[in-house]
Structure formats: C-alpha cells, structure tokens
Amino acid sequence: MDIYQQNYLRLLQLLPDLRDMSGPARLVALGHTDVNVDVIERHPHRLVLRMSHYLQRLHGAAIPDPDMTVEVYLLAETAGVLTYSDCFGSRKVFCPELMAFSPLAKAELNNFLEQWLTKLIAEGRNELKCDLAARTN
Image (cartoon, rainbow, N blue to C red; front, side, top):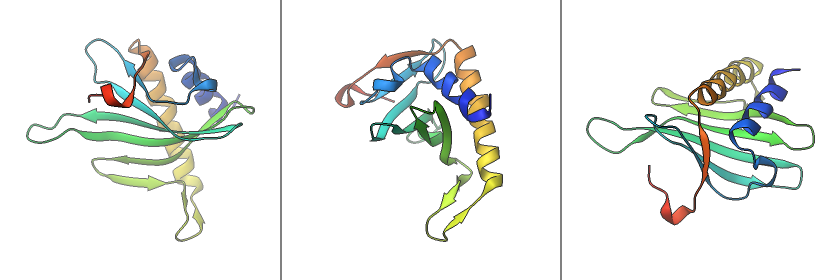
C-alpha cells in the first residue's frame, strides 16, 4: 500500500462520510484546536478538500497553520496534497504559472500529510458536521 492509499484510509478514519461529503466539517478533540475541513470541489470521482488548523496569535486574529488542499480520488481510494501553507510560507506540488511539477514537494508534503493525519487520529479527533453560519475558529 502506498502513501496515497494510506492517506486516504486515514482521512476516511477521521471523516467516515468522506465519500458523500458535500459541506464543511470540523475535526474536534478535547484540549486541541479544531481542524476545519471544507469541500472546495466535488465531482463524481474526485473531491478537493481544504484542511485548516488555526493557531491563535498572542495579538491579533487566528492564522491557518497548516492550511492544505488535498485531492481525493474516491474510486482509486487515494489522497494527495496539492498545496500547503503555514506561517513560514507556502508550497505547491504543481505550479500552473510555470507549468512546473515538483516531485520533491509532492513527496515531502504527502509525508507531512501522513504524519499530520496520524497525529489527528492519535488525538482522538471526531468529525463534527457544521454549517457555515455556525462556524467559529
């Protein structure tokens, strides 16, 4: 089993309704900051999610750290990172402006996703479905 299949299984563990997901959800665990999950694109066999963990700054608004877009292929049961950003900067697997693909960024970001999803599972995260109007960070 490759990392993309493992990431899919971890996402499915955190989001049991992943295959039918159409609206926002939140991953919650007592004592931890919520992780917001939004559906950016939904197609019959492909789903693009935005996963954001907000850090409260000492002075000012909360900032997403990390903030990732994840592409899920439902029939193939794979999940892979498209973009990543945190307080230090951002990275893309594919840069459309330059028509460039980065195998190194793809490997590093998908390894990070595997570690992050594993940590979220270990923290006992549960899916909490929510509507946009009720969301708070």
